[in-house]
Image 1 (cartoon, one colour):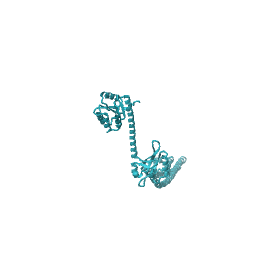
Image 2: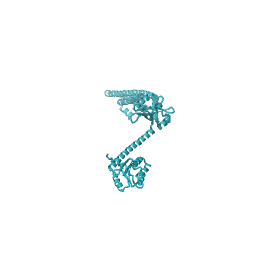
Image 3: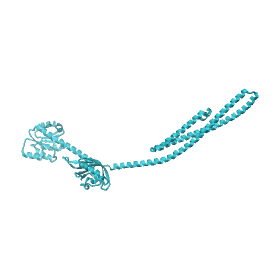
Image 4: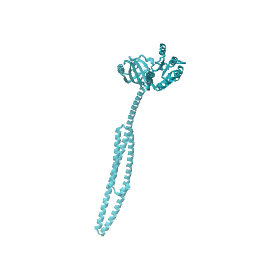
Length: 450
């Protein structure tokens, strides 16, 4: 058998031998294979060394015939405190009485002196392999115990026999359900079903686990007080070494609080949607009134603007008429001056003077009209600009209100419509100014626009 040095290097050896030469040589040799080697010259020292380093020592190799305390007596005392540590006897004697005593003390192996090192290492390697397997098994058992502890502390655990009658429930199950353990032992797994749960769920569950298949889903279990709790359940069959079903184990997580929170969120969303709908209706009614008022004010402004345009057209027409009359008068005066004699000239001069007076009066009247129209136009312009500013502010305010009720598409469309109407009125005012610039006298434009 090959020697696995890595296995031996994990172990510590206690070697007890009264022969100094043999003990020294074998200790040095074994030190190359083991992690550590304790050596003792007799049973008394060997017992003391073991008791002081019990947690560290993994194997004992000892002689039997030793002074002070022999090997049998030393091992008997060691077995009083440790029944598992592997022991190998090395002796030059061989009799039935010794072998019977060795069996009673659970001695693992027996070798005869002089020691065959290869055989000794082979025996120790086998022991090391067994110890390592025991170590792995203990490690797995410790891990499984931890997993079971975690599982029991965070999940409901229910075990049944092959007929799905309950054989075990953990403490968390009792805390949540209100049942005591002895109240459920022997009850069928289906006993935990809440009355309003469909039988099909458990029919499907039973069918799967009885065919050595797992089942996963949500269960609604009854409490002792008649209320219920919801779980996310995982049910698997348990099998023996031959693959035969011995029962089932159910791991369940309580999700009642989680489901209640989801329901609360859904109800809150429904209430919020209802409130938004009511507010949107109220906002729609209020804003319809505002829009209707705004519409009426825009219509009144439109009428005033139309009247102002008519007055401006009359003013432009009168101004053009007086300008043409003045031009014709000047032309006639020039012709009279050119073609008449002195008396006629005097007459014309008098008529011209009268005409100048009339023209002066007309100019004064024209100036008065221009001033009056200028003042009226400027006032109208200021009024319309103020109204347009008010309308734009109102539109901005309505836009903010409409932004808070995003679901009312009709209201948004109406607002966009009145925005366009306001832009059209602004455009019409700009066109009016362009008409004034196109037809009005330069002096009048200077007075109006500066």
